[in-house]
Structures are given as C-alpha cells and as structure tokens.
Amino acid sequence: MYKRAIYAIVPAVLLIGCSGNVQNPVDRITFRDEPLVRDVETGMSQAQVLAIGGEPSNASARKSAPGLCHDYILNRDGKQQPYYVSFDASGRVDGQGFLTCTQLEENQRDLR
Image (cartoon, rainbow, N blue to C red; front, top):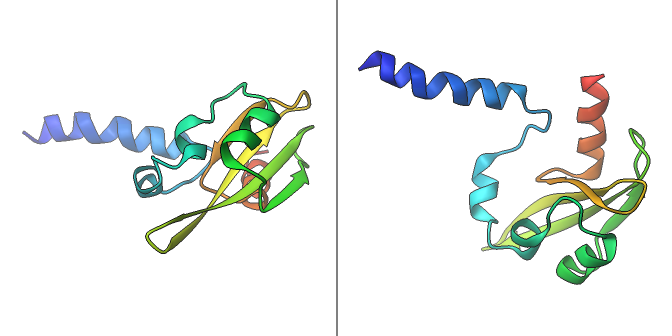
C-alpha cells in the first residue's frame, strides 16, 4: 500500500521541484475557462493573443531574452490573478502562466 503511494507521489514531487515557474495548480483549475488560459498556445502571434485576451494591463520588454511580455489580470468570482504571456523576438508566444512579467524575470534570473 505504501509503495503504491510512493510511486504516485514521488514523480509528482520531482516534476513540481524541477519546474522553473513556481505556480499554484489551483489557479489553473480556477481560471481554466478564461480565454487566455484556455486558448493561447505556444507559437501564436501577438495579434492572435490580443484578439483573444484584449489589451494587456502592462506590456514590457523582456530582460532575460529578446521579446516582449504582457501582463493580464484575470478575474473570477471576485478573485484577481496575474497572468503573463511572453513573446520571443519574432512576436510568437513562448510562455504563459500565473505570474507577473516581473516575477517571470526574477525566476529566470534565479535559474542562471
């Protein structure tokens, strides 16, 4: 019984520990139906993201890599959650998640 639990828990812990962007998985569940979370995919153009999510609350140049980062604020049931979409130098989505662009840059700087 304990071995089965260990076999299930250890891989999950390892995956969580290896992720560069520490994010709350509850946010993914809470905001999964938001268009930015549900519809934006890696490789999309900046114009496609703007069509899905509208204008970001903030747009800034990335410091850790060439490109841009857009900050959005998601709202659901009175809860606000930051969400970023980052773009590479060619204007294509290369990342997204439940952080601000500033938090993303800090995480990437810490990984170096």
